[in-house]
Amino acid sequence: MKRVYLVLMFVPLVFTSCGWILKDHSYDYLKEEQKKSIDTGDAPTRPIVDYYPIPKSQEDLDADSYIIPLPAQVFSSGSTNEIRMHKLGELRWLYVEALPSSVWPLMKDFMSSTDEGLAFDDPNKGILESKIINKGQYKTKLLMKIEHGIRQASSEIFLSHLALDEEGTWIKVSQEENIEDQVLRSALDFLSETPSTGGTSLVALNLNVGQKALLKQSEEGMNFIEMNLEFPRAWAAIDRALKEALITVKDLDRSKGVFFISFSKESEAGFMKRVFTRGNKISNYNFRINIERVEDNLCRVTVTSDSKENEILERDLLSEINQSLS
Image 1 (cartoon, rainbow, N blue to C red):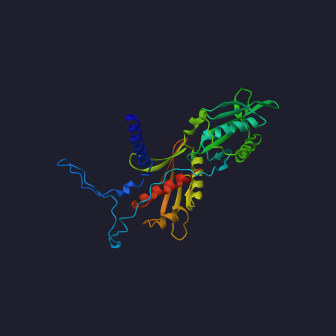
Image 2 (image 1 turned 120 degrees about the horizontal axis):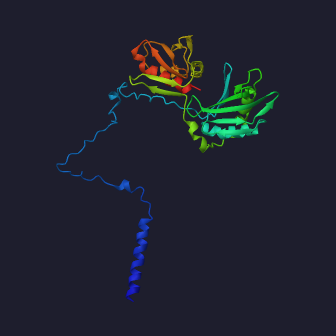
């Protein structure tokens, strides 16, 4: 009997406890009351500082002191998945707005689907080679190279049509006879028609390293773009970036590697329109974009003006150019 009484007393207690546990307590904090501050005695305490004070009235607002500066632009690419063909002299290549590790498996499928077929691939070097085809008296093959592009998360696809000479060396087929343009256009159509799955090749992840344009700062605090390109390509890339950013070039000197930029409130759009809208105080509207050849495959791009007051705008302009590179 004692056990029965104990059970009868325990069951109601369990159910009442469950009722409190299962109850929604998410708003219990609203019932809390202000208690007396904790007495720390003589122990030192850190002072409470309000880093975001609310002005008592509109009269206390100082417009200049409450302007929050915009963060420095970060080199980034959009998510447009853009694909296009570029041409510079006899050089042609495809620009793809995707990482090389994502482009690699697609180009393997493309090379396998061509008449030449796929004979060799090296994901560490980004190289794809077709089978050797007999063309009359000589043998030819296609060599595709996938590299990281100028812009972050972009790729460049190069193609070479090679022939085996009498000495056993693979040389480029003459422009009149090669099929590079034809095959690159087929690759462009293939990429355009292939649905984007967002997949990536783990064996080709190392190709994602080696971006060809980086925004850097020297030890002296000078901002510049380092471009791992020959001067002709660097010049063409900056010229294209200025057009994309809607920045008008007033004059240029290719032999010295200089673009001359001059802005006005009335005529400017794009980047400079945003600058004027933010109310930047510009004392001089003339800027120079300098492309310096450091080595055969390395160039440095800087922006300068005649006024020290425009140093912040020089950095912003350089960042805008960097962001528009492709």
